[in-house]
Length: 82
Image 1 (cartoon, one colour):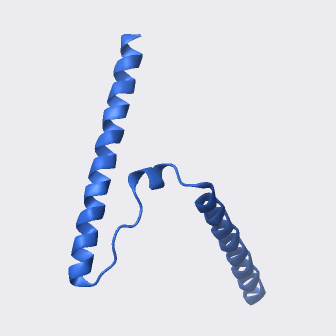
Image 2 (cartoon, rainbow, N blue to C red):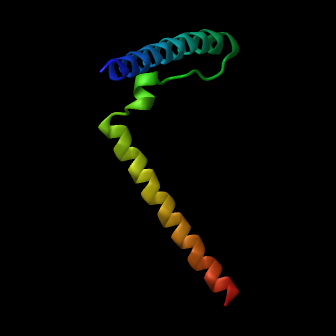
């Protein structure tokens, strides 16, 4: 039981650290981006680790589009080869 609780404690501590560092980087990039005119980090650690359902659907739509493009290119290559 101690092993399990220590592993949970380590995981929780690690997640909190990653969340803190990611938010700090987000603030730094937004400050630097305003000064230099570049882009900034828009997602938090929580958004990256557990994306919302809308983002997952968009990712799946992108995968389907990529598969369509790959299939089209394969058919074109097959036609060129004869």
